Image (cartoon, rainbow, N blue to C red; front, side, top):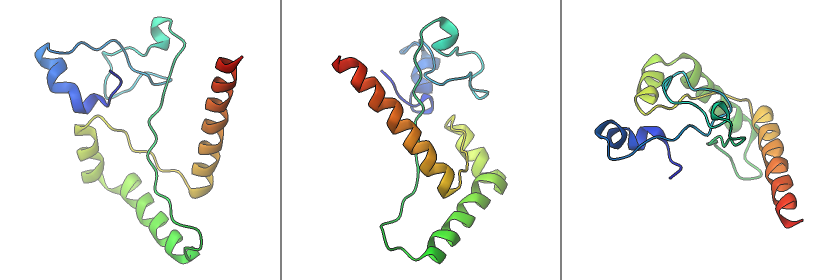
Length: 119
């Protein structure tokens, strides 16, 4: 069952669930004892990606203000980072341009996988 580790940690700790691996590209510092699938010889990864988006026509000053606030929270707010780590989440800030680029690359990757399956 692919899911966020923080959601099932109590079941793993109790022995009700067993972890097979992490779907990340690289090992996760918050979970050093759990190997990635790639480290186990299985060429698979899947990064969950959460982002904020605004509808077309949103004033740029609103986008800028939200972006700056989000950057400050993710990069400077130790209380937020500490809370996120309790759920085994590693927040990463990306600019709107970086986010757009990442989304395009991810879309192209999965589009390529679908094309390969259809052949």
